[in-house]
Image 1 (tube, one colour):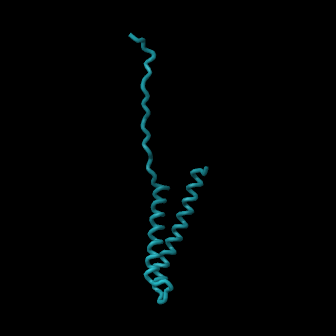
Image 2 (cartoon, helix red, strand yellow; image 1 turned 45 degrees about the horizontal axis):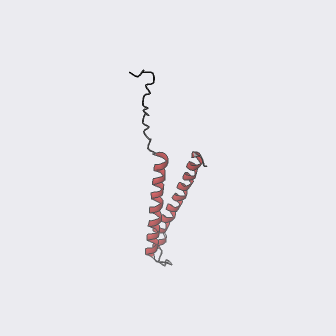
Image 3 (tube, helix red, strand yellow; image 1 turned 135 degrees about the horizontal axis):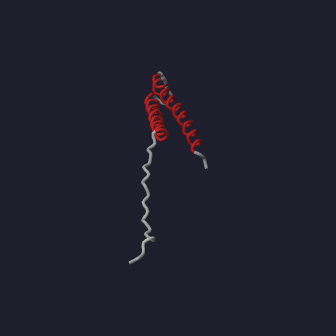
Length: 90
């Protein structure tokens, strides 16, 4: 099984990959879609760039929230029934 440290390291690597995907989406949205002759059409590149940016942005936000802003669980105090074996029955 992987330890907590290894999982955290893996998630940080995935955040950096998502940042790279976000940059690719930004490039498609602002650079490729402004070219005059685009192979698949301008609309495709605009939608593709926005989709890449949205998906990677949501993943980055969710993963950062999961890594750094975890909810601390309230631990309830355990209550055990008293064993009154010390008392004599009447």
